[in-house]
Image (cartoon, rainbow, N blue to C red; front, side):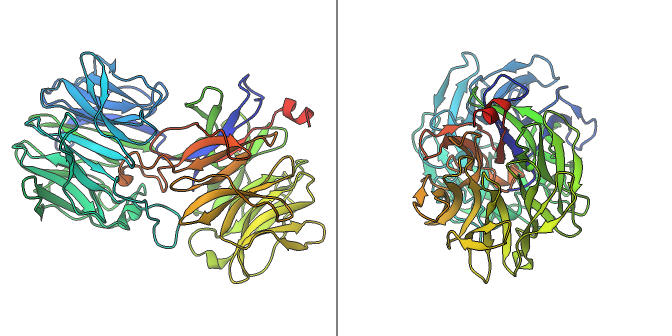
Length: 586
């Protein structure tokens, strides 16, 4: 996981909250609604508000626009007039509410929510009473609903038939999605497209006889979920409701998504790739340009509303909403790690050449500075020594081209005194020191074997701890166990082991991946990222490598699991802030 982080602490230096967690989020940090004429002229913001407003939908009567906003915490639905006045909040639930679409009489909306068990289902909201009822349920996620103009059907995309396979040679899940239909009363559920690849975002023709969708291979759901795919091509497909027969719709080249039929019968879509990002029409003419997402046209087709991604860059310190009020959550850069005092931390950030450098951040501030870098090599997963007099980290290449190698190294807190600790042809990284600072555990992979190793810092002797596909080891502050992530039965799960290699225990057992852990200062709790709740939107919309990643906490033995975040972005690589009280109690 890459680019941004969360911090979780046990007794904060800067707040009364006993738990502050710092972590990284991969996803947009600023998105704003815009409205323009269909050709892109007269573009202006719909609302003047900072933060995240996204996924607008224009009502069939032309009076209102419903959209999703995180302006007051969790993702909720809001409605506003097309001139930007009359803002109204429609939902106020700690769950994730998103991707709304109007009924043909503009009196109801169907939307995506995690209210029932945490996975993405469809619910229907009455706009007069604000009462909501469930429409779909079951395993998997349901996304991007669209109500037919005749009111008889709701089309949507769903991964309910998928077991979330991983992309070839990696750990990220592919997104296998099919088009489904269901009546507004919940009856008549049926699948329209053949399972095995991806077809999403169905939109209705004016006579309710056909659906327009964008389709791609399963592997492309990885390639095209990045923020700016360099090139590629998806298909726009027209599906006959009666027969299920599919034909290719006329459209230009590129990574096409968000398809729509305009009142004129013309096709429109968003092109996501960096060659020509923006809205395009079937006749080849362009519309609004840039990082445009989720457009919705006025009933007469003359205007279009959409959101634009204005920033994907994380700040050093940005408070964010927590699903559990007992935990104070803060966004920061990639892979943060606190100094034992809790007064500062280090994190990784890409420099101008694209490799990651180590940066030092004062807790509570937005004023990081470079601490260590080495040209052509990334600094990854740093950890402070227990006394705060050294920083250990991996240095090299960790994802693509791992055969180039990486080694564990250390520097002093001012970035001086570089010392490489491991050697050989294997890819070594993700070090975690023991509480006494005399040893550290790290992962290794390569021709010389895989698994976890423990090195004695004084004499460089190495002991084998595990020999399986294991990663992300972390030594407990109490010193009694080491937690790590293991590939097991097709998924990644969290395990623990004694430092002598005994008593291996499986702590998580959920569909998908669990990993990227951090210890509470007292060694009683673990914060981790999990994909157990699945996707909450079609993957190409998220701009996140692993958009299903949510933060959870659990006891050191895997019990008492609690969810902290609930969104469609990637939340991972947490750090739990030490506090003076916690240090004095040891």
